[in-house]
Image (cartoon, rainbow, N blue to C red; front, side, top):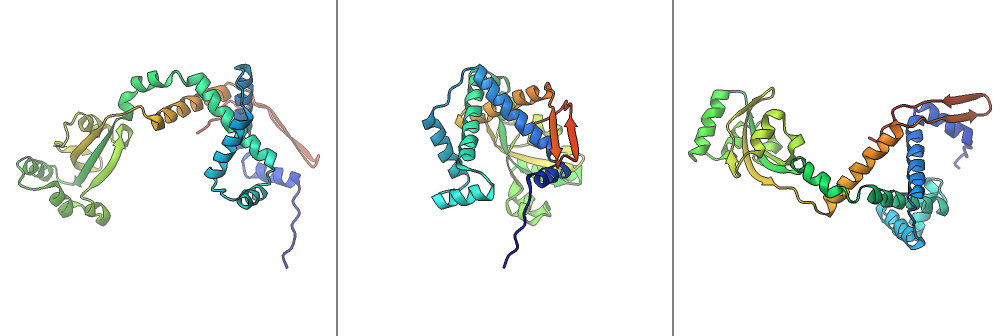
Length: 263
């Protein structure tokens, strides 16, 4: 027979405190208040049907297919139906506010930072000997050997060797400064001259340069990033005051938090 363990609100709050989670909670509370207050100032409305749809999306996101799944999830998280609808409402309000503030700025941001969204498909072999790398480079240019053969001969990692040194699809941030300019200046398919870094001598085959396209997925990502940056700025400029009483035995006052981030 299982034993019951009664936990008070004060004990919960104390555990949050000693787990060093108060800054995270303050950030979350401040974020919610900023969203609600700013949306109110902008006269942003949310219809009941929209909340219902947002709640349905929230259920799907948490894999709550059946009604009993939803009730079990709510019980686990100590939430009521009203709480669940409140989560859906706040999420929807945040999306509407983001669109209101930055919906017309996404395209301009994309074109100003278009290079940041370009990507490259590459294969790579790292060697210790620069002379050997140059020799292999010219052999590749003369088609005396294939990149696949080089990868199988010189890559030690078994999994990487099996895929011929395939590096996947990487954006500019995925390359070192020494490689970035050379990779994105390539005319694929192209073998680059050996590049020396602290890791060794890199022999790189650029298979494809993927030009960025402002599709719905990227549009949503840019909108989210702009909104997050704005929230960060709002919180950084805000004085957050929290008073927490635990069993009337002490009073914790956080009078100023200068830097709270969303990252």
